[in-house]
Image (tube, rainbow, N blue to C red; front, side, top):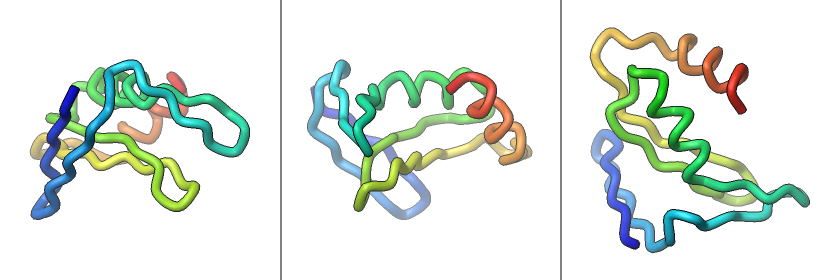
Length: 79
């Protein structure tokens, strides 16, 4: 499947299946699972998770007034 997400002025175009896993430092990670946790916070409009140079990166478009600390707490509790 093809996924397109916008982040400020950055357009990310990814070609991957919804079940794709990546291996990072010996761990298998399902990127869609992380995206689901981010979207479940209620303050994220859209997001895209990927690996860049051995670092797990999440690009998020947040709703106005949403506090990033809330996102960090939610991820710490659910991931």
